[in-house]
Image 1 (spheres, rainbow, N blue to C red):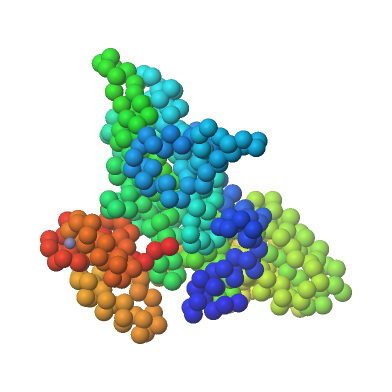
Image 2: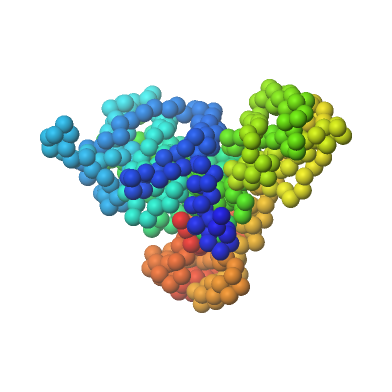
Length: 480
Ligand SMILES: [Zn+2]
């Protein structure tokens, strides 16, 4: 396997293939999710879906094909998305009168329908989410992180006024933050995007940003306040309590299968995947060792442990194949299984069993008592989840720099880190609000604005580029 530190991207591609999460297809940028890869998504999906429903949202489904004229209605939206739209131009051997785009996102189709569905203040709010695939024809692709077709959810809500719509925008960003931090064990910075990084057609875009092990950022989720822009474009008007026709205020918010890529890039190590127990397709692997085939009581005992763990709702597997124990250890470590239990004749005779957590160096000896083993494994799964979060957070803190104030210092910072073969990470810097300053920093260093965090560790006084008074404090970093 490729060394993670020397060539992070190759390590990533090697790992996801060897761990059997995905495969390439003849369609460029479109990948197949193999069962383990898809199951990780199902667990993420399950948790998100539960939180959406808890906050009053319901799922619906909208068509994948969108008429071209829908895109013309909101000019920022078409400008932002047109370069990456794939089009259907003929069907059943005949040229279509109007081209149909494969949806890059569904604001237009949903806007068109909401204008029909929303007539009165009594129809509001509309709180709908869609689980779907979308298409954005990308030039440079990386499985899970950036693909031409990907899976995601997109929430689309409509509200009576700005206050309610803004509350919704923040509520969903907070849910994203909680799921990514608590469920995926990935710490994030939440904040507002700069105007140049806004979603095409949004009034304000907010994001959560996560740091990968190579120091690059992944925008892990976004929530947009759309104001009345889409309502005006698609005529989403309602009769308010004062008997006046007014525009609804809409929001949209999304997270995608990039989260799978993020989990791998945040927690993975030289041995392969390290999966948080919450999303691991296999949480516990049982492996018989030594000359276990001559001692049937070993497999019987493992079967009992298997049943007991399964009864507790733990996703457990028993590997009784004829591969060597060493091979199996490597294989299941590569797949990122959180906990391994090994039982051989000597341990059996001593009434003990060995436990190894994926992210820890040492094995632990446990008493071979079913109830005690189950209790210890349950505790271990919980503590490992917390441990992974703490490690990721410590890593992010170590590589988040707040002592860079000028472009010259940023150049120097990058050069120094390179010389030490260390990652440059992110820097917190001031920004005057001028797009040109943001663009210049990007051209010079490839550092882009990640977001303007709600709770920055410190407030910056001067713009990193022009030295004028800073209006905002911004995280800058290289990004996927
Ligand atoms: Zn400036």
